[in-house]
Length: 276
Image (cartoon, rainbow, N blue to C red; front, side):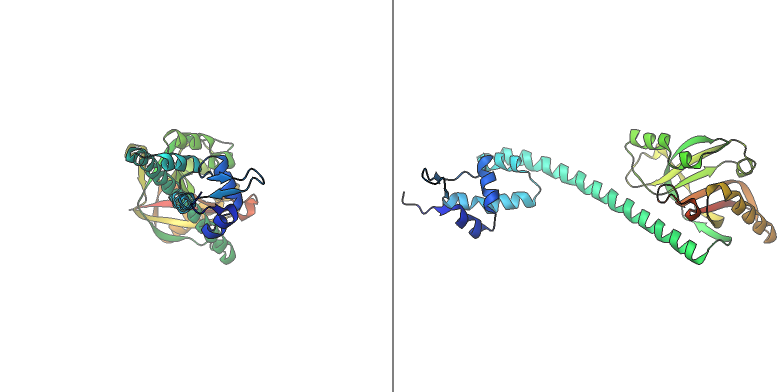
């Protein structure tokens, strides 16, 4: 045998790969040694096999699994590579989309935690007039029944199941729009819409637009069962400052059961329409 052969240790050192990895490549028949000593079972590799290691590393960089690489390494056809690469491109695009959704969702939740901490630390509970940006949201109509269970309405199984059924992923806080806030304050059943902002595309027929107008706003710190106090504060402030308000209201749950179990630390923003 005139061709120089490299021991497994030499291949490991030259190619910066572990001997364990080389043994595994042999086991699954990706890089088999050219010669195995009968005496001590040592593996020896030709230069051609040694040069396969960088190719495998590059396939790994591209996200290919070992079993996928094997097909490429054994193929003499462009067709095999074309088919495999096209499939991998589709997989990577989906992974990229999933990572993007995860990044948006984590970042939005982190921002909500910072917002809640700032509201609590600075005791920001005064009433203000603010512009609510226009945004398209996915929604579901439900009935807010009394006696109410806020936890069940916010961690809303029907809502979660609906989002899964339309393959839609959401981000940011849960909102509930009450069609008649006065009925809610009087503990009367009222129509509600639960909604959240989308983290990926959803059919326009399944969305509605909110915001794009000025609203009365106040943060509420504490359990949801005491939210009426903030409603009454907003109504009184509006009367004192000459504002007319509409029937509907929004509750934006900055932090709630999703984030923390101590209801005294819940932060909710109550928003009420201003009418001319």
